[in-house]
Each structure stands twice: as structure tokens, then as C-alpha cells.
Amino acid sequence: MSESFDVIVIGAGPGGYVCAIRAAQLGLKVACVEKRETLGGTCLNVGCIPSKALLQSSENFEETKHHFADHGILVDGVKLDLARMQARKGEVVGANVKGVEFLFKKNKVTWLKGAGKIVAPGKVEVAGQTYDTKNIVIATGSESMPLKGVEVDEKQIVTSTGALELEKVPGHIVVIGGGVIGLELGSVWRRLGAEVTVVEFLDRIVPTMDGEVSKQFERVLSKQGVKFKLKSKVTGAVKAADGVTLTVEPAAGGAAEEIKADVVLLAIGRRAYTESLGLEAAGVAVDERGRVKTDGHFATNVPGIYAIGDVIAGPMLAHKAEDEGVALAEMLVGQAGHVNYGVIPSVVYTWPEVASVGETEEELKARGQEYKSGKFPFTANGRARAMGSTDGFVKILADKKTDRVLGAHILGPDAGTLIAEIAVAMEFGASAEDVARTCHAHPSLNEAVKEAALAVDGRALHI
Ligand SMILES: Cc1cc2nc3c(=O)[nH]c(=O)nc-3n(C[C@H](O)[C@H](O)[C@H](O)COP(=O)(O)OP(=O)(O)OC[C@H]3O[C@@H](n4cnc5c(N)ncnc54)[C@H](O)[C@@H]3O)c2cc1C
Image: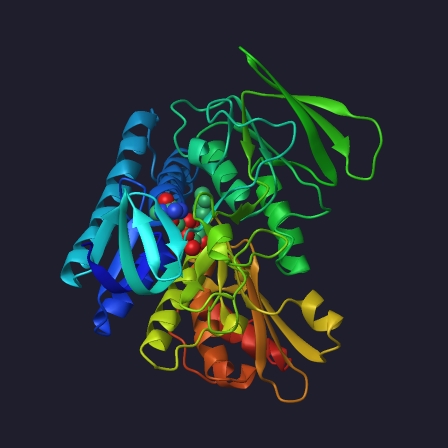
């Protein structure tokens, strides 16, 4: 007879593996099913971690080649060893996925290797064996969204997975989609020498972010050499030995043009992945976008089956998936697990970085919320000047009457780290004045956050 468990988690991405570890910490007998050769899901294998490894390496290359001279450091003959850069990325990924394997052993989580299928509530089949379990957690993540007429081969037309594996720097890379993944990977290849053109359907890049940030971000990336074709859609791609010819039309209709690319990166978003999971047979309901439907407690319509992470509604972010995994594990043992969806930071790891938490000005206006805004530019921050990284600003939005912080939007050096301060402030229901009256070290980038908080009340000191 097969072993039985309290919880079987299907998928070992940041949602699934964190849920499995937390459930085991809480005393449950846990298995996690993963069909990939390694643990860690999209994030550790082909997402967050490898992309950040390449972003760091390519940034180092660009700094050495173009910016060290500003600091009086003269380096001759800077050359790219892409094979070594890619190998280093592999080492970074390897250390991370091995780390999860170690954590599974430490916490006595059983890794069931293979594809998991729900054969009935309380029954999961893996590699020909059926396991009994009190609870099933679907954490099968997401996959790249396809586009009609643009057939991915992961060589000439790639998703993010192929874009992380290129063996030579393309002459011209066209990125379809001006979202986070396209801009991060576009930045990597531009820094390494490619010409980069981003084609975006909407009238602005990173469309879910604050409008002012997205406009300024576009300017900064343009200054770095990225070309943008906004309000445009790709309607076809023809491959030949010497490259790909894309047909690009104005979004509102009109004459089409052709753009030639050596490599095309398709990055128009991601969709929930539930292939061969047996959802239909088990009677688990999905929404119009194929995402598993859940209630406020991650429960599906079938008792004993839950879902978390990219496969359900909400921002497709690793930390959102992780927090859901923890909350669900705690709920399964009767604790009060909770995710505050109003305070989930979101970061674009380009340079400068873009980070945001809470509501944008557009969202506040749309719901008729009266607010005050405080802004502080990095040109007036001593540390940013010392770093030679003065592009961007911090913007803090607060309730007009109560001064409670409602959102923050940062374009600038280390924005992804800076935003954590505001996330903590928001979790504690802080006012802009609370942030402003907190002593911030000098000289630090965080002083720009303090000054933006002061600016909410019209009393910034250094501008
Ligand atoms: C290029 C790129 C960069 C990214 N960068 C960031 C970033 O910087 N920050 C951030 O927060 N997010 C980032 N993301 C998004 C992040 O990777 C996802 O939000 C996160 O991985 C979602 O976690 P998950 O656990 O829900 O699913 P996933 O990480 O997708 O994991 C799901 C796992 O389930 C497995 N699986 C699926 N079906 C089955 C089955 N039937 N049986 C067994 N196993 C199965 C899959 O093999 C996979 O390993 C990035 C994504 C990409 C593509």
C-alpha cells in the first residue's frame, strides 16, 4: 500500500515548496510533487533567480565598460565571456535549488518525483502510484502566454526561458510586451551589446504601475538606448535562416510595417498552468482565464482541495505565492493565516530599479479617494550622487485627511530594497509623518524616502 499524507502539495515553486515546509514545521506529514528535475519552480529555475544573476552580471559589464571611467578607473580591453556568464548563472541556480532540497530533508518533506494528477479528492497519482492525503494543494504555477502567429521555438523566437539561455548576443532583439519580464531581459541583452526594440500594445510600459513612474521609466530606458514602439501590435512572424521578420500594426488599426530581428522575445504575460492535473475529473472549478477558483481561504469548490500562487488570481509574484503558502499551511492546522493583498511590493530589477507598493495615483482617483502626494528626486540625494545614480524619484501617496500611507512608487537606485520600508510602514498603518519623523541614516538612499514623506506635508528639507 502507498504511503498516506496529511498534505500533498503539487508543484515545488515558491508557493508549493514554502507551503510544504511550513506545513511540516507545524507537525503535518507532507509530500510535495514536482515533475521538474529540480525543486524551486519557475522562480528558481527559469525565472527570478537566473534573470537576476544575468541582470547583475550584465550590469557589472556595463559599469566596467562605460561608467568606471567616471570614477577615475580606467580599464582597457573589457571583453565579454558569455559562456562564463551563463555558467555562473547556472551555478547560482544550482545553489538555490539544492538549498530547497536540503530544506525538504531538514523538515522531512517527502519529494514525490514526477507529474502529479488528482484522481479524486484525497487521492494523487504520481509515477503510477496513488497516494492518499487529507488535503491537496495545487501550486502548479504558470507558463508563458502564447501569441497567435508568433510560434515559439526557444531559439529564434523565445520566451523568457530561451532568452535566459542565448549563447550569443543577438544583433537586434525585439521584445513583444513592455512588462516586467520583457524589460528586465531586454536590459540584460542591451547591456551586453544588442539593439533592443520593445513593441507594446498599450500607450505605456509597465501598465499596472503608477503612470508618472512608467513615463519616467520609459524616458530612462530610452536614454539607455532601448527603442519603444508603443500602441503597436505584432500580428505575424516569419522565420528565415538570417532572422525573423515581424509584422507590426498600430493597435488602433492602420498600415502595417515589417521589423527584422535576430531574436524575438515573446513576453506578453503568463497564464495559469494546470495541464494534465485532472482538474475537470476532480470537479475543480476554474475561472474564465483558466485560473483555479478559490475563496478567501484558498479553498476550491471541492472540499480538501486548495490552490495558491500563480495558478490562482492575483499578482504573479514569488513572494505573493510564498505568503499564500505560509497562510494556507497555518490555516490547515487551525491557525489564522493571512495575506494582506493591499501591501504586496512589486519590483522591476533594471537599473535604475522600479518598485511600488499599495495603490497608484490612477487607482486612488478611480475610487474617489482624496490623497496627498509627496515626491523627492534622487538628484537631491547625497548618496545617489556619490553613486552616480541620480535618475528617478520617490513618490509617497497618503490619505488627505488621516495622512495614512496608501502607496509608494519609486524609480531609482535600489528601489526594490527601499520599498520594504514603506511596506512595513503600511503594515503598521503608519502615516507619512511617522515615516518622516523616523531617523534615517545619512548619507543613505533611504533619506529620499524620508524626504518624500516630508514632502507629503510640503516640508521636504533638501529641495
Ligand atoms: C523570467 C521571469 C522572471 C521573474 N522574476 C520575478 C521576480 O524577480 N520576482 C518575483 O516575485 N517573481 C518573478 N517571476 C514570477 C515568479 O517566478 C512566479 O510568480 C513564481 O514562480 C510563482 O510561484 P508558484 O509556486 O505559484 O509557481 P511556479 O514557480 O511556476 O512553480 C510551479 C511548479 O509546479 C510544477 N508542476 C506543474 N504542474 C505539475 C504537476 N502536475 N505535477 C508536478 N509538478 C507540477 C512545475 O514544474 C513548477 O516547478 C518571474 C518569472 C519569470 C518567468
